Image (cartoon, rainbow, N blue to C red; front, top):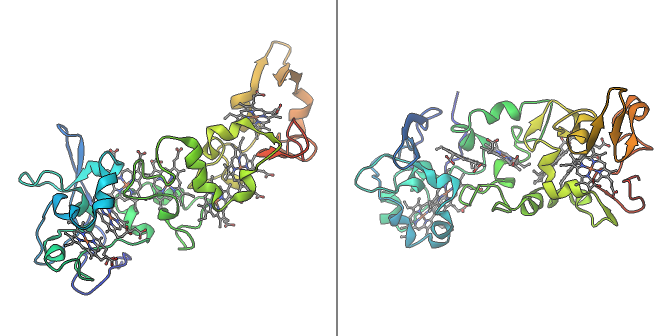
Length: 259
Ligand code: HEC
Ligand code: HEC
Ligand code: HEC
Ligand code: HEC
Ligand code: HEC
Ligand code: HEC
Ligand code: HEC
């Protein structure tokens, strides 16, 4: 199988799938994951410091980023995380950043899946974002250079939601009656990569809602939700069928989230 990584020029030769693997050595002392970088004939490692001069912005935000923890083993240079994905940079630096002198993994999912092998399966699930077909890319939601690598960045779930609502504005509102579950983030109910359940839901039935809303079940089988016995209601289907709580994201007309 040919490597599907998009390369920028003939000077860069990528050794094909597998050349860029996680080595099974975890450097315990600094808690880094060591990788074998893509190869660039004739080029040697220069270290992150070698990139600062010209890519100050990227470097400035990189400290503490998830991907700052991957590194190419090199005792002399220490931090060489940039080159673990971009390959050794000496030729690129000398050439003042000339085209084709360094690897740009691009937007192909293969660039990420080489290391995140497990994610391939998630995108193969029956209900998933169209990443493998090339209609979307990992970088629509992730920035490899930033923080947790989830766009909108940081730990704030609200900003994680922005990653989703730039494409799904309908779910953003504003609604007259908000469903406060939205504060927990879209991922409280949706698997962002893919799921076996329709609409990429984390659960297919009432359990999706009962995780947060179940008040009690007693010996008589009373299922108390929102202060009301829901036994017969739950038999009639999921919570978000028409006539019940179909406005799961928020409603303009009804507090119990209908319409
Ligand atoms: C002397 C300045 C300079 C240094 C040092 C430098 N770069 Fe660059 N780099 C550039 C320029 C100029 C470009 C082209 C920018 C553009 O096309 O917008 C570039 C482009 C790139 C690209 C995109 C390549 C492409 O074909 O799309 C990557 C990736 C990159 N640099 C990584 C690095 C890394 C990693 C380092 C450190 C090992 C580094 N650079 C050091 C100047 C430099
Ligand atoms: C986990 C792998 C990974 C690491 C580590 C990494 N990059 Fe990148 N880099 C990428 C990918 C993937 C792209 C292409 C992004 C795209 O096209 O959306 C990219 C693109 C770039 C570009 C091209 C312009 C741009 O932003 O799209 C530059 C410049 C760059 N990286 C510099 C750096 C520097 C400097 C470092 C270290 C501070 C670094 N990268 C670390 C994966 C990485
Ligand atoms: C060279 C291997 C490598 C490549 C290539 C790579 N990653 Fe990673 N990525 C890692 C490792 C290792 C970690 C775990 C870092 C840690 O220990 O926190 C990670 C962490 C992450 C995280 C989790 C951050 C968190 O804190 O939960 C995301 C999201 C991520 N990567 C997305 C991507 C995307 C998207 C791409 C492609 C643009 C990519 N990665 C390319 C090795 C890689
Ligand atoms: C539709 C947006 C979206 C796309 C596309 C996407 N991701 Fe994610 N990804 C997320 C979100 C959101 C999270 C955080 C999940 C959470 O907090 O529960 C995440 C989490 C992750 C994580 C860290 C947690 C974990 O599950 O291990 C990795 C690694 C990751 N993604 C890799 C990838 C790769 C690789 C691709 C492309 C093949 C990709 N993602 C495409 C939205 C996306
Ligand atoms: C770059 C645009 C984009 C981003 C960002 C994005 N999506 Fe999507 N999403 C789409 C497209 C396009 C579809 C329709 C896919 C299809 O019909 O095959 C979709 C479909 C969905 C669906 C419906 C799936 C189904 O089976 O009907 C859900 C749920 C969803 N996305 C949730 C999310 C969440 C949660 C996030 C943020 C983590 C997110 N999306 C980020 C473009 C995006
Ligand atoms: C409380 C749980 C919950 C939360 C939180 C949630 N969703 Fe949903 N979402 C659902 C359910 C349930 C459905 C299925 C509704 C249906 O089939 O009628 C759905 C459906 C969708 C659909 C498909 C719409 C369609 O017409 O097919 C998209 C897109 C979507 N959600 C995006 C998002 C985004 C973006 C966020 C975050 C801003 C989000 N959701 C947060 C429960 C939730
Ligand atoms: C992540 C937790 C969470 C999940 C999952 C969740 N909710 Fe909620 N929901 C809340 C919170 C928080 C509130 C506001 C406090 C309250 O009334 O309990 C709320 C309120 C409600 C309300 C009352 C609205 C109001 O303004 O009085 C309804 C109806 C509701 N949710 C239905 C659902 C349905 C249907 C589902 C499944 C699709 C669901 N919820 C899933 C957290 C959640």
